[in-house]
Image (cartoon, rainbow, N blue to C red; front, side):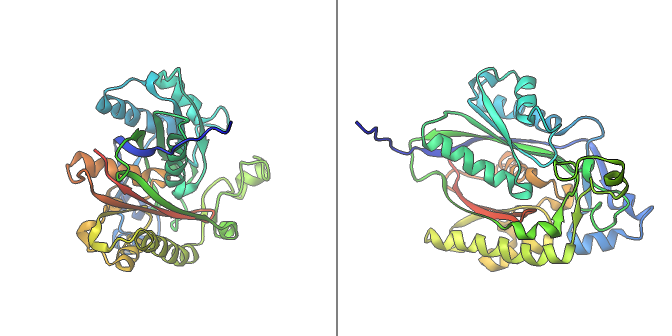
Length: 334
């Protein structure tokens, strides 16, 4: 006899973040590169970013996860699945999910790393949602953490001021109120964009050699103007699309939660949605682009400040290397 299952609703029930203590101001770059504080601010919206000198991405996630568990009043042994979204894993294997599982002592959890670049957290959130809905897990930990300073060429003025290090995490659980939680998603990839934003070496195609090191293939490469144009269209359109698809208006949205890559991209997305500036979560000025960590850090900061209330509609939106992009509609549940 065929088993009939009913999908459950998945919701964020706890959120936390962590940022390293060391602050790197724009003046650091202008002290040795042909750039200036004004140039960086005008083109990106970034004033400072945080840097982790010792440790890996798991060390950016660890304090956030500990805080998340404390806020929820549970232990690591209650976690069923760990989804670690990152493009800067501690190492190729074991996965950073395994590394973190050991550090927090989550003896009952299994998990994996997810590589979606700046859209990684959204892809991880959607994946975790499906486990919850299908009854495959009760508590899913979704982490976005990247130590971008480990793959940035600090002599490349086009990329080095853009990125910072940080980590954020959310806990997904089933809820009975079907009108709350993760309501919808629209996610995309387009591999033809890979030539414009990538890290060429370090994988099986171009394993580490003296040549790959000399050619600086182990650093982020980005064609800024090309990526900017694609990001403006992709992130803006998909954000507006998910609102229209769910028969909402800009007035219904409490916050746009955009990936923090460039303030001009964020402004274009906001304008496309018809949302005023005060309804947009922005912290790029303080932290730069922390890749998979930007959205959970925003959620955590705004929630800790008491700015998110139960019932608020949030639109999460991102665009990143791959290309990857998408949006997720959430109605805050706690």
